[in-house]
Each structure stands twice: as structure tokens, then as C-alpha cells.
Image (cartoon, rainbow, N blue to C red):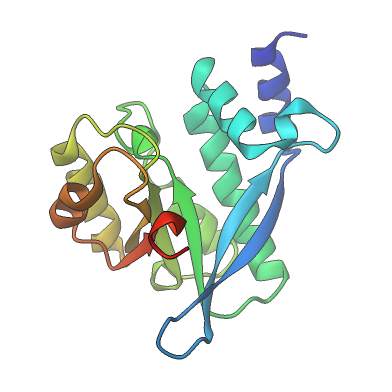
Length: 180
């Protein structure tokens, strides 16, 4: 089975697991919400999220993988009755794809009785962002629906403070380099 076939099978059968990492308010040290983290099938090379997402990018299936990750994360968040905000990791590259379907995240939220105000779209700074203007347009769309925006690992990737100033996120998660 090729890598592409393996990923298609994982996506179609939704053989992914969502875990949740608490996010604390720095002012009160209280849990504010949970970041959804995805793992691939146990016992495979694709269990590791970096390998899973890099492989999906390599074979052109990142959009499909991210959509199923959102669905699984939302469903599991509700199933566990977690309180606070749900932080969903989304690759900026996916938001910039012209063929990325619109409205899927909203549909998943409606299916599981969550509202956009309970969800934070978390952008990773690990990937190059060649078109901040297009990204900003995509984020305005999410904001207009009621979502909040977060930039993850600020300072770890390509854009740093410039990205922060252009996107004006509601939340910023600072790279561990700055506080260790």
C-alpha cells in the first residue's frame, strides 16, 4: 500500500485519536480551554503528528486530513464534556488553498451542539506564510462567524512579530524558548 493509499484509508476510516492539553490563563492559573492534539494509528509511523501531517502535505491530502481532525476533535471534546474553549490547530496552508471546502467546521459544530464562540482557530507558525493578505481574509471569515484566533509558537517560525501585528490574534501562545 502506498503512503497516499494509507493516508486515504486513515482519513476515510477516521483512524485518528484526539487528546486534549489544558491551556491555562497566566493571570489566574486556571484552565481556560483545551488544545486538541491528534495522533495517527498506534503502532505505525503515522502515529507521530509531525510525520502524519508532513506525509499528508507531501501527497496533497493535508486539507482532507485537517477536516477529519477537526471533526474528531470536536466530537471528542463534546463527548468528554470539557469546559472552556476548544483550540483547533489549523495549518495556514490549508486556509490558503482555493479548493479547501468552506463551512465544514461550522457544520461539525452544529452536529455536536457547539457554537463558534466556544472555539479558537489556532494557527501554527511552523510553516511559511507567503500570502498574509489571503490569510487575513480567511481569518476575517472565521471571525465573522464568531470564532477567535490564536497564533501558536510565536517566535518559533517564519513570521514572528510581523505575523502577530498583521493578524491581530485574540490569543498568542509564545514559543517555549522565551520562557525556559
